[in-house]
Each structure stands twice: as structure tokens, then as C-alpha cells.
Image (cartoon, rainbow, N blue to C red; front, side, top):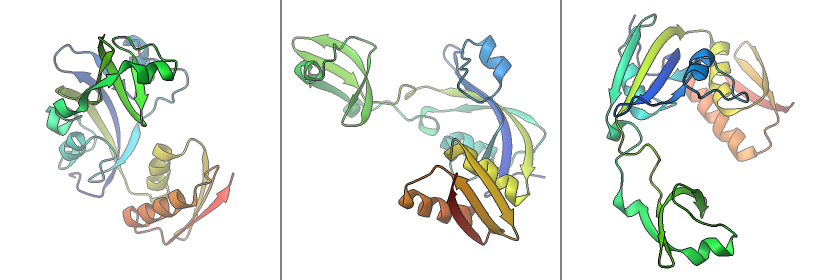
Length: 213
């Protein structure tokens, strides 16, 4: 059975840079410890993605289509299909005084937030600071080692996998196509967008209601 668009699949993965084999993301706890990436606050487990919805970066989403569950694959993603090409227009000179006013001492390698955009300081000289606002992995070729565990067909399991991407804590009840989601989510606009996405992705679900957890 081949994976097709709109299928929900459960996968494990390990992602590394092609040029130096540096691992930067993975789903397995033991591997995280081996590669020095373990974070006690993170839950390490397989993830559920809906094919064609870019729940993962677009190149990986595209590569998963047509593959088979129960098999392992290694995908090589070009910068265009991973985190994008490095754009020179996103490397900007910023007056160092802007940082001083925020009580920030800019130095090479420092991550900064300007107008809610994250960047990395490259150089500081002559009252001006060069900041790179590209994604840190832009311009990089990425290798993904992926094991496709299964295709998910149960509507409740699909919704649980979908919600686990978006909500830190939730309870879910699904009865005859009617979903009740209990969470600490307060934003009504986000609830409406989430309801729309659920109904679009999982046609077996006919209604979605949100309650406070």
C-alpha cells in the first residue's frame, strides 16, 4: 500500500546536515542522548503527519507521498525543499544603538529578536551591527532518515495525532463523528481555524466542540 495525499501516517525520523553530518532534530529519546540533543522537557515519540498539508517541511512532505509503511528511507532535501535558500536581502545592517536601547550587547552568534523576527548577529563594527534574518538552516542540504511506522485509519487516532502538534495538553472524546476537545485554549479565532482544519482533514468527523480543561 502506497501513501497518498491526505493520508495520516506515523513516522520516526532523524535529521542531519549533509555537509558535516550534524544531527539537529529527531524523535527518539535514546538517539537524542547519543547525539547530545536530549531535552528533559521534550516528549520523544513518533509523530503523526497528514500528507500534503506540510505538517513537516515541504520537501519531506513531498518525499513521503508514494512510499510504503513499514519501510525506512533516507531523503536528501535541497535547500529549496528544506529551509530555503539563503537570501541576501535578509542580511541587514542595524544601528547598534537600537540594541543598546534594549539593554542588549550585540556580539557575533547572539540570537536577537527585532520586530518579532529572529536573527543572528554576524558582526559588530563602527556603530552598526550586521544581522542575518535567514532561517539558521537556510542554504543547507538536509538528510532525513525516516521510518514509516503505519498509515492511520482510525479517526480518533488521526485527531489525537493532529492535536499533539498544536496543544500541549488536551482531552479528546469522539462519539459518532462528534468531537469534544477539552484544553486550555482561549483564543476563539484559533479555535475556529482549528475546527475548520479538522473537518477538512478528517471527513469522518462531523462536528467539533471545545471545552475548558
